[in-house]
Length: 171
Image (tube, rainbow, N blue to C red; front, side, top):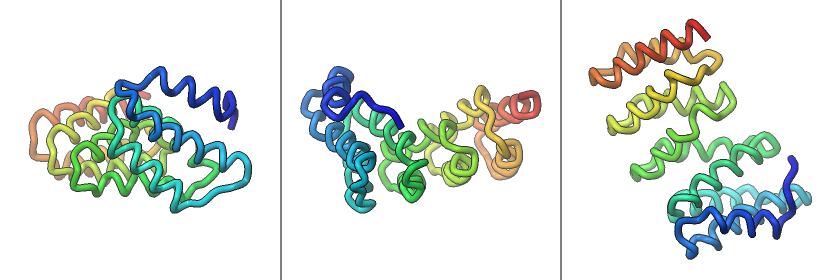
């Protein structure tokens, strides 16, 4: 993985924050990434750091944290578990973050996150994810969409899932 260097990445990240008070959150994420690149990685510390950025961070913070998690997870596959952890949260914000990144994950990870969120109590989460699937194809996604359609009761979500299924078969 290529970066611009620890301090330059931090400087760049701060320019995208909605709230300057979030700087320590995203800087900690960047430190985790660079520590891993330098051969110093602690899963528990990394997990806590990413979860803090997701939970406490405002716009600009959680998006960047998710982007860094997507970049580092191939090097540290255990980190993919954070996405599933978010899907099981009682906090809507954390489940929304998982939904925002679900279709950007590697196919086998994306499918697990989509399966978990397809049963989310929030229609907003399910509708957002179904909508994303209308424009993004995931290997194996057609099967997941089919199973989801069998259990989905909401008409708006079902409509998006039908579009997603059509997209999956033509992509």
